[in-house]
Amino acid sequence: MRDAIELLKSRRSVKPREMTPPGPSPAELETILTIGARVPDHGKLAPWRFIIFEGEARERAGEVIAGVFARKNPNASPAEIDLEKRRLTDAPLVIGVVSFIRPHPKVPAWEQELSAGASAMNMVTAATALGYGACWLTGWFAFDRDVLDAIGLKADEKLAGFIHIGTPSKPSQDRPRPALSAIVTRF
Image 1 (tube, one colour):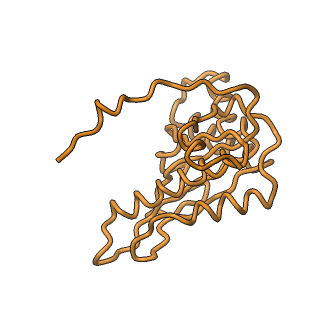
Image 2 (image 1 turned 180 degrees about the vertical axis):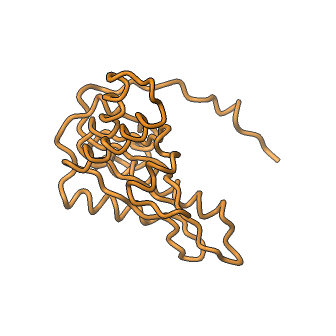
Image 3 (image 1 turned 90 degrees about the vertical axis):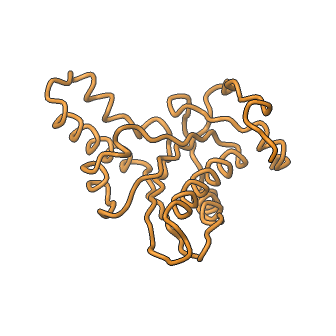
């Protein structure tokens, strides 16, 4: 495993369409999920949970996404509907990070939502440390209540995003990063 600081300095997202099998083994998936659950969590509320999409489940979820898309876009072409069917099929593993709020007098909703985001980022970093490509994405369907209901979210739950994980098919290109002078101030 690479040095943690070097890993964090060089981590970059890999596009799902640039991922191939294999994905993580069951033991590696357990490691990724365990690391996803080791995040700041004031009040020990665990305001997140995970949905695993692998194998056929990715295609079943794609059918849900495409069905909702077709119903809401009656003029959509077959090619557009087919694209929606394949939203979760590029990477061999996709993890849905579900966020919800547990009412608490000392832990505001915003802090709980940030904990879910930290969970997603921890999983991206863990997958990268294991040698896989990873990408945290949303898309319209991550905010569509009909899709969320159909994949098992409760009415009070949101999707923080989908973590796509697989073997990179080519080196990932870095993107420009902000200069620290543009984003750091001192009080």
